[in-house]
Amino acid sequence: MTMKGLSKKQIIVPMNIDNNNSFIKNSATHVANIYKLLRNAKSDILVDYIYSDPLRISIVTNKVSLQSDLQIIDQYVKNSEDINILQVDKSQLSQSKSYLKIIGIPYYPHSKSQDHLTSSNVETILKQNQIFDNIKLASKPRVIKVSSKSDMSIIWIDIWDIQSSSKAKGLIN
Image (cartoon, rainbow, N blue to C red; front, side, top):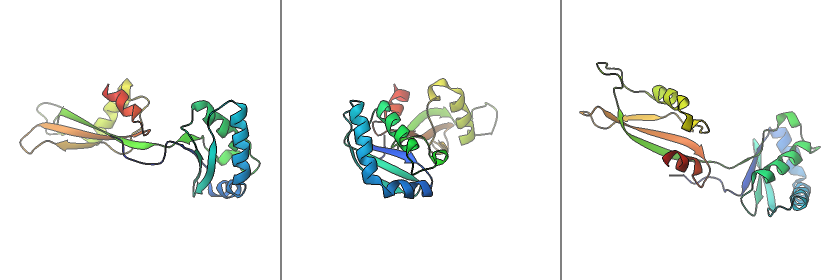
């Protein structure tokens, strides 16, 4: 399941506060320039407005942006005279957290041992598994013993995902 977060129509450009303040002063000009660049690239995306948070600017569009649109916007922002290019990160779409519940895992993974499964053990196992290659954990995994008399556990994993939960769905299927 995915928790609500930012809109999928936002493009986030992380940058320091000085760049942020300089860029946002001319936001109307930037909206017009980005609009022209996207039109020239025959994109259906329109930039509605730009707003700032302390460590990023958000460019709000009329539709969900494609990777090609992100590249155009990223290139424009980095070529802008208002900012220091070294202090600007790559543009990205907004992300949400999805959570996964894994059941039926032994709480004591090694027989004849009282060492129980820890979140560090789970992280190590996830890093070794190729289906988790493109997955970033949003928090440490939580290992919960099913009941006091049981030797089974439930593992909860929070991952960074987009609002359509495509990464979570890819793991489930």
